[in-house]
Amino acid sequence: MATASDARDKNWFIDKFFQSLMFVCGISAIVFVVGIFLFVFKEGLGFIVNDMNVAEFFFSPKWRPTSLHHPTYGILAMVAGTAAVTILAMAICLPFSIGAAIFIAEFATGKTREILKILIEFLAAIPSVVWGFIALSIMNPFIITAFDVPMGLGVLNSALILALMAAPIVTSIAEDAFKAVPDTYREAAEALGATRWQTIRKVVLPAAKNGLLSAGLLGVGRGFGETMAILMASGHSINIPTSVFDSFRALTATIAAELGETAVGSPHYQSLFAIGIFLFFITFLINMTADFIVRGVKKG
Amino acid sequence: MFEATSINHRNDQVQLRYKIVFGTMLVILIIPVVIIMFTLISKGSHAMSWSFLFEDPKNGMTAGGIFPAIFGTIWLVVVSLLASVPLGVAAAIYLSEYAPDNLLTRLINLATINLAGVPSIVHALFGVGAFVVFFKFGTSILAASLTLAIMTLPVVIVSSWESLQSVPRAFREACWNMGATRWQTIWHVVLPNAFTGILTGVILQVSRAAGETAPIMFTGAAMFLPFLPNSVFDQTMALALHLFVVATQVPDVPESLPFGVALVLVGIVLIMNTVAIWIRMHLRGKKKW
Image 1: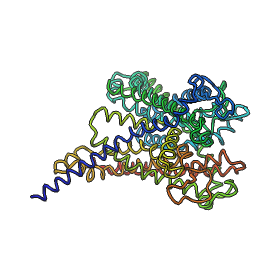
Image 2: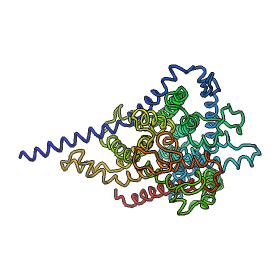
Image 3: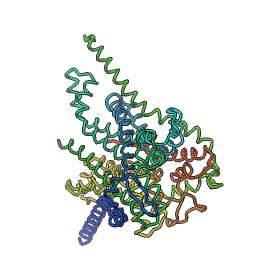
């Protein structure tokens, strides 16, 4: 009799132990997000307190952290470049991705759909450094000959690469959004005599609107956060781009290119972490908004 | 008997037209990638040989093989898996089996989404600030792998959660009715049934981790090392960084060399994905519920 209850006690303790262990691991995602913010903030704090001039940081296009007499830390040109590329990339990527998603979700059936989804998954798996290499070795000469310009690295190249990179992600999120529209909607529309295109345009698209919006937002988040591909495709010179062939420099690429050359703890090193904090907040906002939009639909 | 009227014909035509329009959009997305893959293969295959895969780089990385980079990538991926798989699967178990529908669970989900959305270079900054500087691991495989582990954690959590959720609730209820505790149920019934699904997620994570460059650049991967790493406290070369280096940093590289590196990298990633997809299809065929 004693053994039976002992065994039960032991099992009870094991059960409680693992429950607590799973809980600790469960909250790890929160710990890491907070940890990322704290550690990046901690390294950048010295710059924010001592060297940062808020107006200069956000509104000066001059990023000269290594200047001996008067270093300036302005990220305006980089924000402008990143924004321009992201907008152009989305303008290229969104129509095609949503069109592709409509085809996969509404027109393709059975095997075709399976194969297309696998293909999209493959595209999403290509590493960003490979895209960067493609920008350098394939896109660059292509743009030079196609548009007769001296250099093929810059806004257009980056936007094309980014559009190709974001396309599989946007397509699969958009497809999820279409799939989330209940089939009864489509059946009701078809019972009223609507063609499939009428059903898509008048019923499915409006119902999937929020999902599509959040797909676009996640694409924008990807654009702001992309590092290696943009580092290699942008030409990496600091100026506010005025044409699609202009070279520019991205926030992410600046960190990637300069972090290795700075001394730990120097203002330059810390300023790169300040850019990191800025990037963290931008992507945080974009992701939260995208999630909120989708959540809003599910509740409504 | 139903006879198609002119309106039916018109509708069919409209439908076909839009099917073609959207199909073309999809094809336009895929064509550039096919061209790119074709170029990678045609130019990279010149560099491909046994000695390319199994020899050290020579003459300032302008010749020779890429073995240290492949070897280093394996180190980085294995160490990062050791950290992220137990943690990620446990987190998924909590979310799927224990978590009540409350604010904390909502926060965990938000944090997971955010962790996946944080730019890779910010993960790199975190790796430098936390592992290299604060925990004093220095630039080492350990620091780089932990950075990779945190970055790829959402992949494991989400895919493991999905496979745990696909185990029918009746399995758990049957087990509880036999007097098993929650943990016994998870360990003996839920996990074995979700195993293949979790494995698929892990393989996809390998493919993701092998291709990442930014998070390892400043935390443990070196442009060139004349020796192979011996422990997790050594630096290492890595395939993804090697591609960046030979494509941008080294002068006078023969054209086929970076194409060869890119081909090997894409090859590894796509093989991993194919294996994952194959397991998933196999699994779908076998499932009886």
